[in-house]
Length: 102
View (cartoon, rainbow, N blue to C red):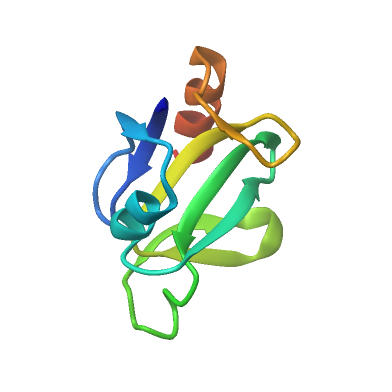
């Protein structure tokens, strides 16, 4: 199943992507075991990042201000249906992500 998502690489603007809903592929994007978080301002948006990004010395990417934490390394954004399933981002969710990362 294909998903409309977004990717934020260190030092680059967030970009729209289409990706396969596959855990192995998610691991390749983030460079290791993915940690799955919810975007603080919209819990229907999941963030996937490297679970060990900080301890591996990955470069800081962006702040999660509400948690006073930083995401290190590449991050993926996809929608979630509230039951643990990943779904495509809507146009409004994509705008929310762009605004959050400004």
